[in-house]
Amino acid sequence: MFASWLLVWCAVAGFGASAPLLARRLPPRAALVLLVGGGVLAAGAALGSLAVIVAPSVGQLPVAASVGRWSAAELAVSDPYSGLVTGLAAAALAVLVVRLAVRGGREGRLLRDTWRLAAACGGDSDLVVLEDAGSVAYALPARPGRR
Image (cartoon, rainbow, N blue to C red; front, side):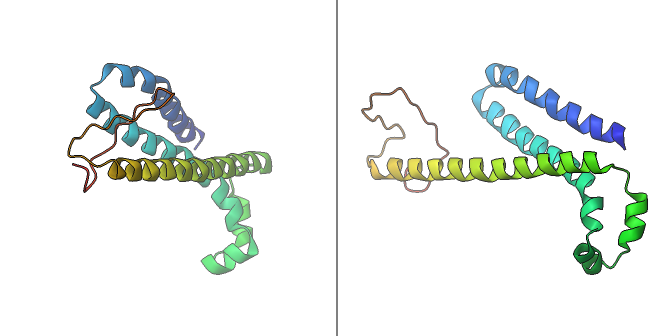
């Protein structure tokens, strides 16, 4: 059990370490697909591995045991993780879920606002240049009405 958990986290860490190099060396389209897809897979693997550690303890709660129709006592006997490990995994899982929700909401709002700004600029060109004091560039996926 520990070996599979370690393998997942080594893969996640390896992807995180190699992502900047891949981003610099791959063509933009390939880098986008690989990094977004790999990031989603790595996040899913990290969250899933933590959920597997936490699940037996959650299953021991009376409410969960009654809904699932299993024995909380039997599950407690076969729980492979100590209370400390489960507590740390639950804390890490909670932090990651909250961070994912906050970051996803922020990025989603930013993308929505940028699409609205691009749609409001008018013109038939794919390139829009706006006067601004800062240096910022956006590359947006094609959106109906802009292309």
